[in-house]
Image 1 (tube, rainbow, N blue to C red):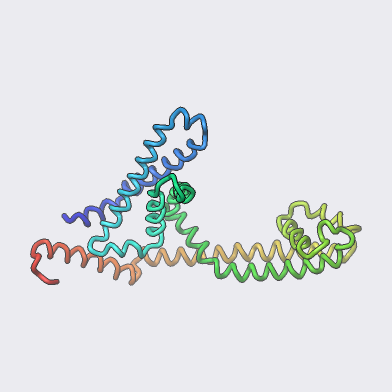
Image 2 (image 1 turned 180 degrees about the horizontal axis):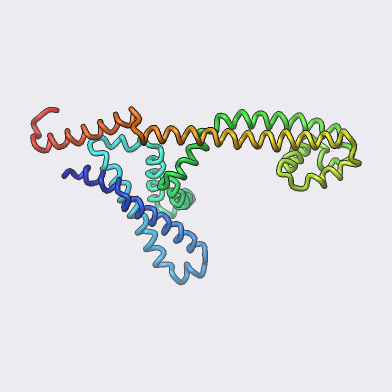
Length: 268
C-alpha cells in the first residue's frame, strides 16, 4: 500500500479526528494553567514538556494530511480550513523570544480555535457568518441611517434639556446605541424632561424600528444563510457533481502512482 494511501486512510479515520480534538483540548487546558503563577512555579517543566508534545503532534498531523493528497500536495491548500490550521501551526514554530514573541503567543492562543475546524457544526456556523457578511452590510447601512436620523432629531429635541446625552451628534448616537440594548432607556427618557406626545413617539418609534425590526433583520439574514449553507453541504454529501469529480480525480491519482511503482518507465 502506498504511503499516501495509508496517510489518507489515517487522516479520514474517526479515531485520528477524535485524537486531534483531544490534543487541542489538552493544549487549551495547558494554556489556561500557564496563566497561574503558582502552577508555573510548581509544574513549569511538565507544562513545557506538554507544550512541546502538543506542537509535535500538530506538526505530524499537518504532514499526514498533506501526504494524504499523494502526488498533488497543493490540493491541500484548496480548503480554507486547511490553510488556517497550517498557518497556525507554522507560526507557532517561531522562536518564543525575539521580535516574534507576541506573534507566537497569539498563534498559541489560535491553536485553541482549531477546535472550530475540527467540528463540522462549528464550521457550519462560521461559514454562515462569513456568508452573511454581504447581506449584513446592507442591514448595517440601514441601522446607520436610522441612528443618524434619530441622532439629529434627538439633538434638536433634547440637546438643550439634556446635553449629557443629546448635546452633540456624537453623544446622541452613543445614547441611541444604549437605547438599542434596552438598558436604561427609561432613565434617559426621564432625564430629557417631561414626557410629551412627541417624546413618547420619538422613543417608541426608535425602539420599534431599530430594535425590533433591524435586529430581527440580522437574525433573519443569518438564518437564511444558515439554511443555504446546510443545503450546499447536503448537496455535496449527497453526491454533488463537483464533489464526484474531485473524488474521481483522487482515485485516478492513486491509480497513477500504483502504475508508476509497478513500471517506472511507463507513461500514464
